[in-house]
Figure 1 (cartoon, rainbow, N blue to C red):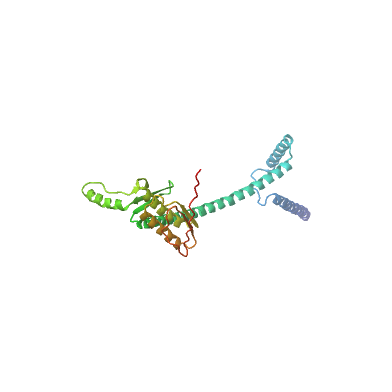
Figure 2 (cartoon, rainbow, N blue to C red):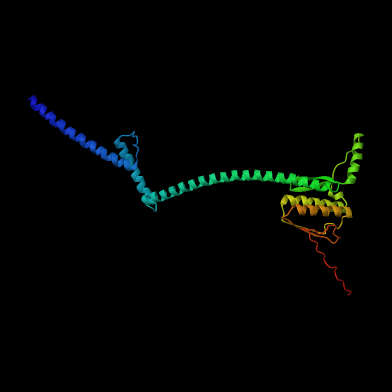
Length: 274
């Protein structure tokens, strides 16, 4: 009896083991199918019946949406994939353009700082050249640069002003007012022309202009200012071997011809009686 009982139980055990093996094979097959959708296993908290009901509800809802829409779910999924790809590409382009803009801003700031340094050095050079040219005539002065407002104001002291300045400084010690540099509006015609020549020579040196021309620059100058101005311009021309100077004047030239100085004299104009 007990042997028969044991044989029956062994048959049931063998049948259960075969079912268990079949179930394991089915689980492995379903896991392989599930990995095609998602590599990671989703943690499920609901029982199988609840999940089946939820899946049925989702399918019914998707069917309603598909019926009310002009496109099928596959077409919607394909279109969504295209938009997602385009969005990712645009996002990457925005990121690369942002990096480029940041690099350009940094380069712009560096170039701006270099330009400011170059501008300041040219400003100092122009001021020194202007003071040096004025000293040829016994004048003193300075250039006031305002880069923010883009203005340039020359201030000049003539030789007569220097004499008056000493007297003013003496009176200042007694309670009077000291002498200050004046602008070009208070200068005489010859002094204005000489100051203009000094300013142009200073700016030309800073700008490195290859061709420099002046017309009737000495019309309002006296003989002393004209001689000094011509000597200054000739010396400046000789010191700039790669620069062409063209000076036009109705006055007599106080400069002798040289190897690098050529004088062209025009004929007197012919006037006929009408």
